[in-house]
Amino acid sequence: MNINVDHQPNCRVKVHVEVPATTVSKRRGEIINYFSNVARLPGYRPGKIPANIVTQRFRSEIDGELEHQLINEGCREAVVREKLDVIQVVSVSDRKFQQDKSFTFTAEIETAPKFELPDLKNIPVKLERVVVTDEDVDHEIFHLREHHQRFEDKEAPADMGDVVVLKYVVSMDGQPLSETHPDLPKYFHSVEDNWFMLDKEDDFIPGFYGELSGMKKGDQKEFTIALPGDFHLEALQNKNIEFNAECLGVKEKRLPDLNDEFFAKFGEGMTLETMKAEVRETLQRRREEARDASLSNQVLAHLSDKVQFDLPQEAVDRETQRRTNDLAIRAARSGMSNEDIEKNQEEIISSATQQARQNVKVSFILEEVAQKESVEVTQAQLQSALAMMASRSNLPTKKFLAEAKKNRLMERLSDDLRLQNALNFLKNHAAIEEVDPEPSKHGCAFEEGKA
Image (cartoon, rainbow, N blue to C red; front, side, top):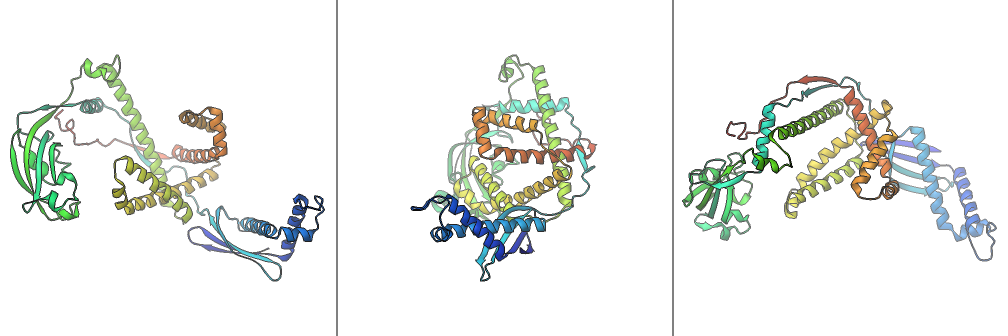
């Protein structure tokens, strides 16, 4: 068999194969013989149909099966001879029976990338020590109280952090925006009874909350805001908009006291001491998980920086499509409209493509690590993972396992576990340098001493 291989970018290989006439003739005879044995034709006993009759009656089927076998045989020999690590056969073209009775075709094959791994042991990483202080616990309880806060009427002028209940109409050059720009969001036209929490870090119109600060219930105020050239609504860039506002009320936040009524919200028998213990345990677990995630990210980033290779484009495309779908679903669940999703389509695809390339690269690296270090998946691991998935599926175990086998879920799960074991190998052999944790800053009232 004559085989020529043309290596191309992005892990593509073109294989040009010529199957000699002798092989073609032999395979054709075998196929005709098979059809003779299984075919049923009136007037002939099974297995006794003459070859010329079989060839005439089943010509298209025989030719199709012959092409199929010759292509498979040619591709297999090319893979073995050239030691190709095949992902999939992308296409087969130029298939032709030549005048000399030989058969030629060209197969385009997607292959796994080839690269050399660096030293897999003692990868340097820096990890923060896991420390949970009493102040951390108090900070977390403060935010629990914030979650159950209520708002009470306030007679004094509004400060940052308060809520202003507002009614207003917006104009530009003396004309209501609802008339001149009806397509703008409604809050650029008017509001009747809206709550605005004054937050200098989250001013949805630059300077708007500053104008509300100091207002009291019953106050009326007219003010103009000059919008910047990079304002997110193009129609209002570099424009002055006028607000005619009335303050319907001011409310301030009130945190619940640390008393039995508050503790009862979290379960029977909860006390300050048990709440602190549970919060400390939660923070400890959360920080340990963050430390483990940082360890994973650092070892993978180290290997990704050290190893450079082409990626199979089809694999990247498949992962990009999967991630694009995930991002679109998340955007829709977060309340983004279909129109907004379409407007941000280019950004979504760009983000998905970038992450897809990284995911595909990491998968190939971990697969190579698994092969180099003979990493395997134990039966106990697989059974445990399947049992967990079965419990989440709400299906009887036998039915779930039958479906898993039918859909090749076990194979995919085993592959995923093998890559996870490869990652665990890297983490277990990393050279860890522990550092003091960076202080966590959220700019909240607790950190500003206002709690």
